[in-house]
Image 1: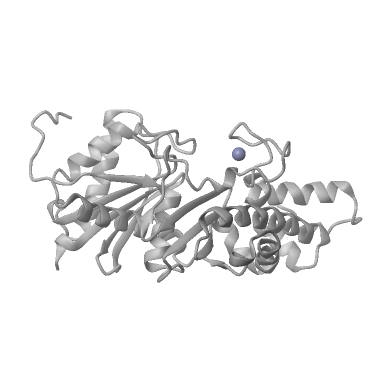
Image 2: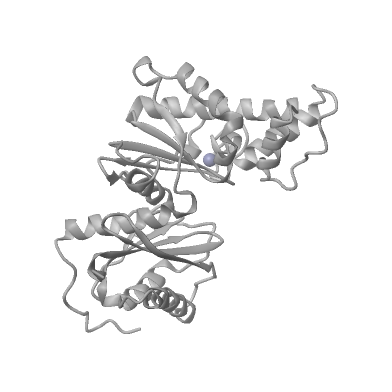
Length: 332
Ligand SMILES: [Zn+2]
């Protein structure tokens, strides 16, 4: 095994931290998942980093044989990791501990949506495209943007925050402190909220109440209801498609991606809304990009692993080589 050509991708999510080893050809040779924990002190960070090291060793690979480590985090990455509201982690401390596991490498950190976009562009549904925008439709709406194989982070690490584009001025309040963001209409929560509003309005009379969302983000049940012909559910997805299509058309005016990929849990309901989304996008976009390919992502939960590994691979090439020294003051 040419172990020096294996790259470790770590995708730090709200429920699980996914890890995988990927070679330069894009073969995922092994992956694992560790439940996410609070990492707020040295002991917890060190123990978690050691578990990641154990995963690598369990694959029969020495830490020294790993060619690079990419860490995807659920937050804005600029000079350091910004706020990550879905996880409680002392990032500086955790990255130091992770560094300790791989002392000859620099841990390369990127935003998780950017990682997923990079992964999809490399080995998934965006393969062979020069540029791709990935929109993840989950509890919230995330997005990542890749051009010529490079993630675009922006001047403040906030590039590609499609979920927080305003599509309804003075609309539904958003956790970002503003109002009317895409996320409030096109996320799983947004769809459920719209569905409930239509049901409460009584506009369509009694809804098909045998398919009722079990919680605030259970949009897949709304999908089922739409497939069963429930007019409130169908309308909820029409609203979602209209707002998201509007937003993506504005994005296309600026960055004109070759392909737009849809990921996240709600993308499994694309049969319900994809045609409407494409129609909405075409209605609102410039003629030149109105036929932009919009399709579902394909790597599903592994996109972040691929992307983080790929990022480490590219950064290693950019850096020229790995560190061949150890910081004598590295005392943990
Ligand atoms: Zn917002």
